[in-house]
Every structure is written in structure tokens, then in C-alpha cells.
Image 1 (cartoon, helix red, strand yellow):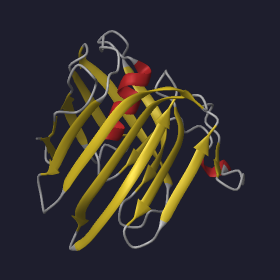
Image 2 (cartoon, helix red, strand yellow):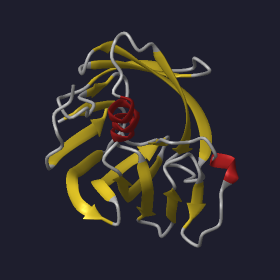
Image 3 (cartoon, one colour):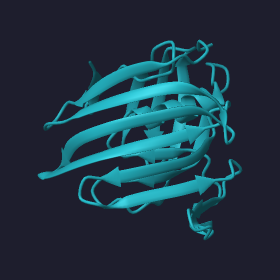
Image 4 (cartoon, one colour):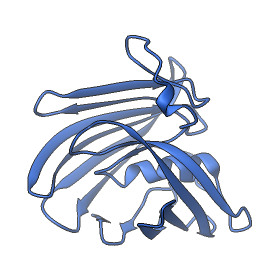
Length: 191
């Protein structure tokens, strides 16, 4: 459904407030098992609080998150590792059972993390709705929590509905041939 991953660079801007994201996505040569790496720099604001950060997400060939690292310009760091079976730990090896069952992650200030379940699940219109428990990181506190999300394919390889399980938010997300969001209604627009 999606083309094989090649190196690509994309940019998004928020539709409210100021900001910009610059993302580089590339296939790796099986370094430590990682096959896909996303690296990005994001500047923006939540409410009236500006932020700046960079993140790196490493995935296996099936788009399952192996690790992610967020570093903010004010010195905060969050680096977590996954066994790809829904178990997380910090870099010192301490288990984080509160995130058991989370295969995917959702970083609040970027549309990129929608690509992770879209590519991993490879949903088509006949698959129905996938109900997920994800590890969510808000960009104002950087304190991860669990979140429940639903994904439904509306048009094979082209349009997916994202919906918060509590129905507080939903959006139909058009994606390109790489599964990258091109327009996130009310939140982001690809440049």
C-alpha cells in the first residue's frame, strides 16, 4: 500500500501560533536492530509558552517503536526504550509498567507520530477500527501518560481517521505515499 521507505525530509507548520517542524526520515542499515529513524527539530508554543526541542525515534522494519529521545532547549530529556511487545523502560533499565500495552507513541507537537500506527497496522477500508493504547508525551510538561486512540482507514493508503477514545477530538488525516500526514485539520499543514 505504501512505498518502500527512502530518505525524505518534510516540514509542517502549526495552524495556530508560531512554529515549525523539520523532520528527516530514513532507512538504516540494521544498526542495533533499528531499521527506520526519524529525527526532527520542533519549535512552537502551547498556550503562550514557547518551546524548542529535538526528537529521535528508532523503529524496526515493521514500524514498531524501539526507542525515542526528546531533548528540549531548556535542558530536559526524556529517553525511553521498548521491547516492541508493549513494555517500556528508561535508559537505566528501570521498568515502566504504567505503559504496558503501549506499542505506539504520540508526541503532542508533531503530526509525524500518526504515521507510526498508520504504517505499522497497514489498515485498509475493510479492517475496521483499530483501538490503541499509546504512550503520549505532551510538549508542555514532557511527562508521559497513556492515551487511548482509534484509527480507521477511510481510503486505502490515502486517508485515515484519528479519534480520541473519549471522542473529545477527531480528524481525517490525508497521507502521502510514505504514510506522512499532509494536512492535519485545525492543527498542522505540510509545507
